Amino acid sequence: MNWNIIVTSLPGPGCEYRLLHELRAMGKFHTTEFKDVCMGYVEDVTNFLEAIRQAETDGSPWIKDLGRVIPVEKTFHFIPETLVEQLKEAVTPYVGRISGGTFHVRLERRGLIGQVISPEVERSVADHLFALAEKEGHKVMASFKDADYIVAAETVGHECGVSLLTRDLRQHYSFVKTG
Image 1 (cartoon, rainbow, N blue to C red):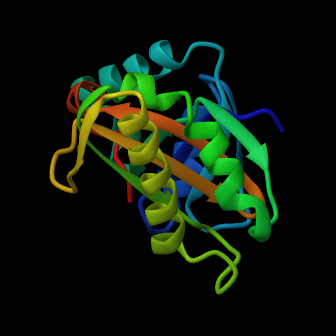
Image 2: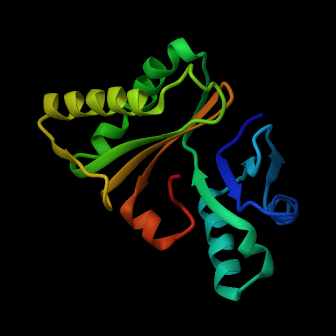
């Protein structure tokens, strides 16, 4: 399936069902094999985020079931042995967008326990971005507290989605956050 959004629901009876019911009015969404995790495709990510923000502002009841939303810029299929190299390739274009300031890499792994070690992947991808930035003469620093940028990688089984979340995006849409 083509997807560009990951949405998690809060745990609890009926939360995922109610959330999925509302999301399906905004795009093509389905549950995954992982509890409280939905994947979807929307035509316009900004309009989708705005619709959720408006529902939040209006106090729509279903918004209480929403955990978080991650818009995804690029997706790919992987096997554990290729994930790091594929992620490095996917995030290489981000170095120009991170041209100054602070960032960190966050991998939310679902499945593949013991096969994909999130901290190792995060460190390897971050080192790759640091090396690229230095090569291009950009000054960047790591920060895990309110970074200017978060490189977000979300795996669902053998599928991975990646995006660059700016501080402005995260502040404007409080539900866009990494796990």
